[in-house]
Length: 345
Ligand code: BDR
Ligand code: CA
Image (cartoon, rainbow, N blue to C red; front, side):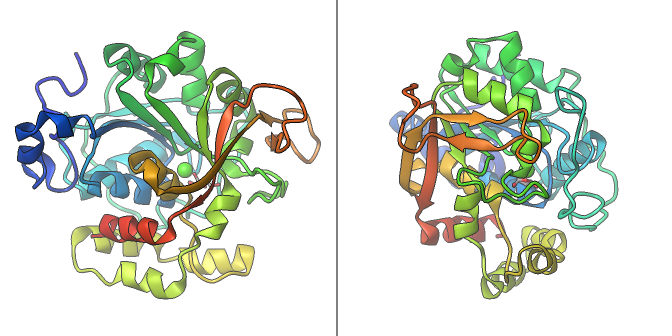
């Protein structure tokens, strides 16, 4: 089955669904269809993953063709359940955006769980179990299939540990040529991370071997690192604005982010919340949002006693190797805020 078969590129978008306001216009004007970003989201929901998914669905010229799920912030059972909950909130049809279950452990079998997303991964909001069906195919196999069915058309956005992608790349080394673009949230490029080994960032530290495989074998990855995330913290006043809406999405956002300001204050001594995955999603759906980026060699440390999972950047290209990563350093904060507000509806 071709993903999205029988649907125009304007179908299955945001909460408006196929009948949403943009769909007829896209059908009437084929030249606009080229602007549509067709996404596959690999994710470990996670509060900020959930926000990122809302952001993608709220974006007028984006379609989400599939969600592949990996263990990360919480166990695989929970991340899959949380992905279902997010799509339930959005009333997305399971055929429009199927959910695929992926890897439950890192490549070497170790796994750290995040502490900042609550026991259920969605801020201890404890939603009832979803009845949404899960696709039978493994997420990594699905990632390979999508690429081969729509070569050059799909943007892959990775918001969790890179285990599913590393397995997919091992199955099909040509994957980078077959996806239009890969945007990854991960890494700490100036050794200012968010983990007990402080120079490391969660997604890279969770599965360092997978991160190393993806960065080594996928030329031109777009990387949104933790330091960039820290620059675009959402202050408390704006958090309250996000919570103020009356619709289902605003209520959902209020529930899942309710604990976040306290956790950020405890962990970083700062007011507000961080929105790592939504920033990466904004870069994927609206590349013009990037204000400053730089291409350099980025490697993943696999051996360090206190630095395992650290992403090292050759800022001055001293190693003489071909730059393999586009590091996003700055983006248009106002535009990002507008996207986030739209996501919370
Ligand atoms: C990343 O770690 C996870 O906890 C978040 O969901 C995000 O993907 C930030 O370091
Ligand atoms: Ca995540």
